[in-house]
Length: 378
Image (tube, rainbow, N blue to C red; front, side, top):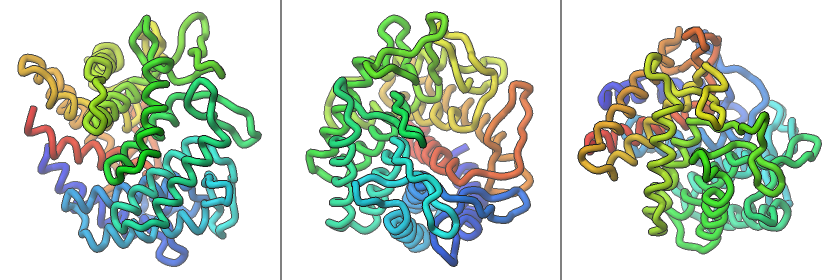
C-alpha cells in the first residue's frame, strides 16, 4: 500500500490538482473538480486555500510533486489568502465570491484556525518576519476578542450567535503545533497549552472517556436524553495531535491518546463493513451508519503514529487498523476521474457524488504521509 499510495499521488493526484485545481487567471485554489474533469467556479473558502497550501508542502516533502511546482503554488496561495481574506482586526474572513468580494465576512473559528495553519505553510516555504507577525496578530485577535473565561475561544455563525465546539479548537491546536515545529516564540506554546488544558479538563468526558463535540458556555457537554455526540474520526485526530504535542513539549499524554484511539477502534468502527462511523452517542452506539472518507484518514494517522509507541504485543492492533483503513480509503478513489474521490459512503454502502472537494486532499495526503513514513515501523 505504500508504493500504491506514492504512485497514486504522483501520477494521478498532483498532476490534476496542480493544474485544473488552480485558477491560473485570478490566482487561488478552486473548491471542487467535477468528475467530467472541469473546475467548478463557485465561491472560495479561505480554509481551502490553507489546506491546499499544506497539501503541496507535503507533496513536495514526499517527493510526489516537484518541489519547484509545489512551493510556487504555496507562495501563490499565501498571497491570495492575504490579499482576499485578511481584515484589519487581525482575523480572516470565511469566503469570497469569484469577483473577489466577500461572500461571508464571518470570522468563524475554523477559518481562523486554518488561516493560522496556512501562514505556517507559507513560512515553511519562505520564512519572513511579515508572515510571522501576521500570524501573531491573528493570535492576538483571538485572545482579545474571542477568549472564553474557562479557556478556549468562541465560535460564531453568520448572525453573530455564539457557540462552543471542540473541533475548531482541535484545528487551532493543530495550527499551534505547526508553528511550534518551525518557530520557538512563546505565542504558539501558550496557544497549544490553552487548548490541551481545555481538552483534558472539559472536552473529554471522565465517565465515558470519549471527547464530545458540542458544549454550553461553561464547557459542559450538550446532551439530549442524557447523551452527547462524539465523532470517532475526531478521537483519532486528537490522539494523533497529542502525540505530536508531547514530542514538542514533553507533556505526558500517552495514556489519554491511546485510550481515545482504542475507544474509537472498539466502538467507532464497523467490524463487518471496515469503516469508521461518522457520529456516535456517548453510550457508544452509532448515531449514523454513514461514513465519510476523512475518518478513515484519521484512523490511518493515529494508528501509524501511536503504533510506533505501542508495546510489541500491541503493535498488531495498530497495524491492522492502519491497513484496514487504507484499504477502505482506496475504495473512495474509484471515481470516473483519476486523482479524485468520493466524499461519503452511505449506510447502504453506496458512493454518490459528481465532484471531488479540494478540501479533502489535506486529509488524504496527511494520512498517506504518515502511512508511508511510519507503517514500516509497526
